[in-house]
Image (cartoon, rainbow, N blue to C red):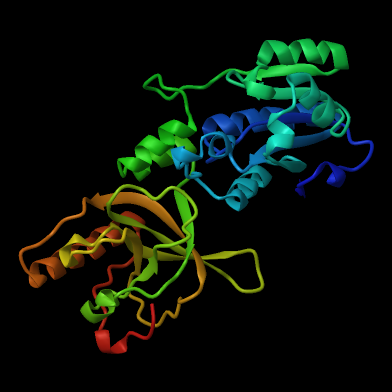
Length: 329
């Protein structure tokens, strides 16, 4: 898949079927829209192009909202590429974009540069200055500029709620990562760089990879999770998936104040991850964050967490490691 980040990147003479959206999280609804774009482009024998925005418009117009993207841009682009489109156009969202009228946006981006023969959008599509344009506006402009418009109806979960990014955020805030995965159609993932922590886990036989600043992606609610720590395989585009028990929270047992994500890779004491960029993928919540009456009670619970994690992930059970054997983790 080609990735264009400016109008100048788009080859002259491009003809395309275009879809436009934020595609944050690339949930099931997004994938249906993009699949429709791809299939219709194949029939038209033109390129399928997915346009997305960076930064997210909400973070530009309402920075006080503190909106965190469900996934970082690269994960979004990877998911778009996996959907089979030919190109993704990342539109830098600033005043030069949001000040355009609906007609100016269509003419500048869809007609003059992308050569749109068809535009595929969802039911709630809005565009142009002040979000003044809607699906009817787009159809009127399509008649004027010579492109067709296809609206993809919202799809709903069995309980009658439409798949949406806001629903994913609600589920993640509750710690329901399995529910979020059902809406997304894939497991939720965050990314960050492993930093030095207090090393309490190493002393207890549970060395952890600590992420607490610069994390990309929505961090689920506090609790303990089963999941995977994913490392890049040097020299390839592949990832190494390591089974992990993941703690999210402030570590109340030790009166912690800073909210962190700590991932203990089952059965491993040899990992040196400091400074490494990793991903943490959440599969299932095991329990809420708790405090215990004694260190022994905490250790017993952590042993149980490892057993449950192994069961959820379908891997062999691994207990705590010998603290004397721990290198850096």
